[in-house]
Image (cartoon, rainbow, N blue to C red):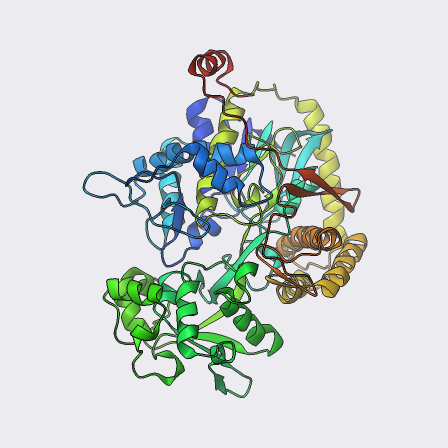
Length: 622
């Protein structure tokens, strides 16, 4: 079959993918293109919150911030490599001002300071925002730049295999989603910017259709790391959106509905006093991610209460903004915590119903749901405790390259975060990581294409994929129902609340499913084939996550970070194993685990003459 040559193929049209391609295009004359399932799909363009945060170095006020301080704070999240933390901090201002120059509307005061606010796990005030759609604005701005730079974009292509020769990238095989044919790219480098493994959970904030492609890297010899570490939080189910920040601070009514239609204001069962409950709901606004340290006497009690109603009692849970909670005609705001009362008073929001307060405090947050077909003035909003972000992911080095030569990962699919991270740091990481990968690729010696050897490799790969399609040929599509089972089990037993016995059982079940793959899988048409490939990716990735959890249970025996392990010892300290990283590999269909030390924060090497000398020699890219 015919194939196209580019030195680098970027997979994904989110903020990280576009940035990687744009930077390669501007830094060197090597050829680069982007491959995508759909330009208008993906997490960057289709997710947000009440005030989506971008985390950066402080650029306003009198905060005594520095690159090293920011790196230290990222590193202190636990199970984080110091060189990645320092690189993300060092690139922060450069990446931020790139976005500003492209027109992303980050607010500044009349003097030009980019004032910030405090976000979760943030000791300073590094957070900024362009509103509910920050990452969408970023993606659109970077897309316009890609168009100006004439970066080729190949749409409607699903990447299905990284073509290797020994341990080096040689190309990429894609499935054409329109007609079911294959399209191949010969290349020296691939930058995966395909987002997190969204396909393994039922309750997620990830947009519909986004499944990720983590298994693509795993099958190509890359390692995964920190796959036990996620971020979970409350989100609406339709549309999928984080209900953080103002959505909580306006004190909505939490109500569950059983199968007969009976309503329950269930939060009163978790608190002795309704004003203690309301004060905790307020806290949930900026303590949005589930945190096991806050699960007993803190804001994560709210998350557990929602989980209990949804999973254990099989009820639907809603936020109601039309009425005040607990049958209160008027809230006595003076009985709230001092923090909640002062905040609402400063916002001139000591009045009315939750939706009245929402419109007063953050009208764009109200308008966002209205634009998506939900009017909070008259409709309840169904919610769940959902998977929002994978802190772990594909293991990368200082330049965001994996163990496979020429394979890079940037954005959420790169596993540069650990037990916890500051809110909004993922957006900074995606920009910093894609910049680092582009710089390395730009300086890397380009290999001349070897058409003969690539044709041989491609023939082998095509034979295998054609055999797969022949094996699953049938009269109905079964991938969706098989995937539904995986997702439902993961959300019930291996999300924010993790059942030790069930994780062991499910891990063994997934490994057996992999051994028998593609048993039970059939496809009757092109849609079925696309679903089959996505099911395969989610099956492998889900099995890797369960294996990682099972091995963590054997090693640690402690609840920590983003999850509560049932039957585990609770810990108030997360220092245990915070200096270790769990890496998972897949070899010949078998998973293995390795525990390694984190790479420490690099020593300060800021003597100017030394840095200048080596920069003149190799731009300090090595």
